[in-house]
Amino acid sequence: MIHDNEFEKDNFRNLIESDTTGDLDKRLHVIDAFLGTEEHVTVEDLVEILRKSGYDYDPAFVQQCLNRWVEHGFAQKKQFEGQPPRYEHRHLGRHHDHLICTRCGKIEEFRDEALERLQLQIAARRGFHMLQHKMEIYGLCSACLAKRRPLLPLAMAKNGESVIIKEIRGGREMIGRLAAMGFRPGDILEVINNNGKGRMIIGHECSRLALGRGIAQKIMVSLAPQGQGPDCREKRQ
Image 1 (cartoon, rainbow, N blue to C red):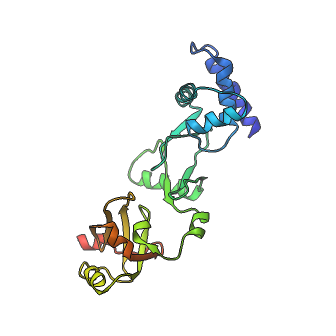
Image 2: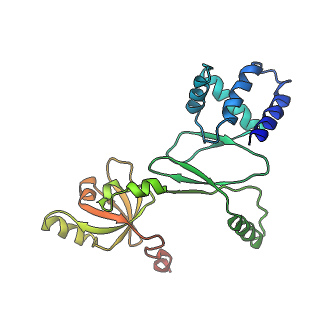
Image 3: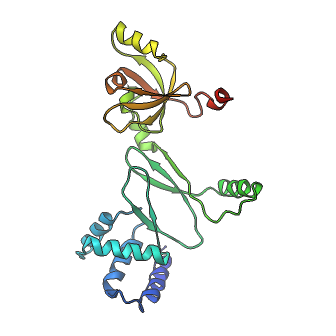
């Protein structure tokens, strides 16, 4: 990796030495900091890395450098859901995909050769010539999954989660009200939109429903086993 970074730095220097943007030394300091981390960094992250190395550069200058590197193909700009723009190295000839934890924000790179071949096969069967692709899988990392309580109110479930109703808390009136809406212990719900305020939008038995947060606090759920849930295609046929 050190050899690769030195090669990348030399390649970068050759490209910008004739550039009229100036500040070559400063730009080399910034790319040194960028190449020195394998994380998916924000502008603020890179400014802090530079500051720890003794370089107090304006965020606007660092942003300009990153924009330039994206243009030259040294960096890739990533916009993961619910996160600020992040930048990662763009190593020539190497492709990878991402696992993104929706709770702690951790980003993990992965590459699966079988998956890569399958995507090419799918495209070829449809007469499609694939130029590039990306895969982003959102969920919970192992650390966050281990911390997750066995039971939690539906109001605390994250977008995209499938959960199973374990119990309904409240008096007979609340239980009866939810039963009238079709909610029963054992039902699987898909969280479509939960922004932490106002009503939630959930999928239940192939329909979208809006639930107030007060009611959602009374419905205790746990993560549903992956792959479970209604096949809504059958219902539409």
